[in-house]
Every structure is written in C-alpha cells, then in structure tokens.
Amino acid sequence: MARRKEHTHGEIHAMAIKSVMEYLQTAKLESLSLRKVATQIGYAPSTLINIFGSYQQLLLSVSEQVLTNLYHYLSASVNNSHSASELTISSINNVQPQKLIELMAHQYFQFAHEHPACFKLVFELSAPEGIELSSNHQLAIDRLFNLIAEQLKLLFVSANQADIILMSRVLWGGIHGLTCLAIDGKLFTEQAALPAMLSSHVHGYLLGMAQEKDSSCC
Image (tube, rainbow, N blue to C red; front, side):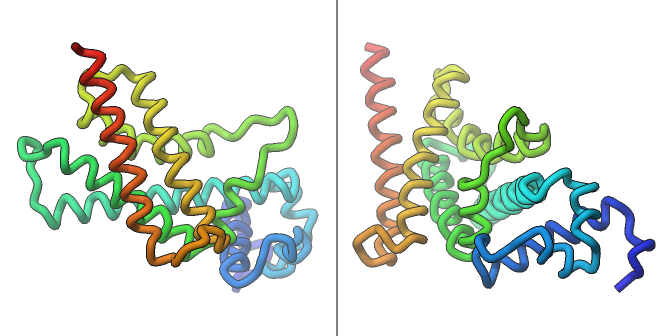
C-alpha cells in the first residue's frame, strides 16, 4: 500500500467507499463506524471528516456508488438481452419492452440478494436535515428510473412524460416491495416463487394500464 502522503483526496475518497462496501458484504451496517473505516484504509478519522464532512455523508457516497453499480448491473442485462435476441429497431414490439422490464425486475432482486446490506443502506439512509442529495446522487437515481421509463415509452407511445414518470414509480414500488420482503424472509412463501411474483406484478400492471389507455381513447 502506498504511504499516506502518496494518496490524493480522490483516492482516499474511493478507498473509503470501497472499504465500506467490502465490509457490508460480510457484516451489518450497525457494526460499522467511521473509526473502523479509517483504520481499514490506514488513515485517521479526521481525514475522512475532512474529505466527506461527516460519517453520514460518507455513507451517502456509498449509497450513490451502490446505485451506480445497480444501474450498470441492470443496463448490462438489458444490453445482453438485445444482443442475444439480435433485435433491430424495427423488430421491437409491445412484447419485448414488457419482457425487458420483467428481466430488470428479476435482476433488481438478484442484485439485492447478492448485496443485501449495501442494498438496504440505499433505502434506509437519508440526507442530513437541510442538505440535499448531490447532483451526482440524484443523477444515479434518475438513470435507474429512466431504464424503466424508456421501455414504457415504447409500450405507451401516446403517454405524456408525467404519465411515464408515474407509471415507472408505481412499477418500481411493487418490484422494490417484493424484493425487500424476499431479502428479509417475509414473503411467507418459498423464495423460488419470487420471479413469478415479480413477473405477475409487471404483467398485471402493464395490462391494466393498457386497458385504461384503450378505454380512454374510446
């Protein structure tokens, strides 16, 4: 490991985030502290305070990185699906966007299952009172919702942006709820049933919205 003076603030920033994420792969957040993180990377807690501002801000930076990782995880599944089926723009129909949303729902759970503590951190942590999320953090959130929104635009070509945003949040809400219940062991059914439950939620919601849009046009 390089000596302390050989690390830039940016490198220490990245080291601390990586340290927290590695720690959460085998332990719970409750057992972590700023001092532990500092010790793991070979710096004093005051150094991390100078860089992040507070322990909570460090955790928010970890949350941002988890969201970024989740985005790349879901994006890869969508890109791989397109490559596997050799789709062209002209061959995309109403079935394909639904299948991609279902795929992302399944992969959303898979990511949470592989990184449960990091996943929970994202949704249990809030910004300090009076402080807004950073622009990069907000961008990480928006990019995730946009993955669903892009598929919804293909399904509901006449829907306005407000409708697309609303639908993406409702879809995510159900997917997230089922995922959280599953990783907490509170689905009260075999976990093997979760993929079918996620697909049922996506299919049922999209079918209902399609029928609503059709009826509003008549």
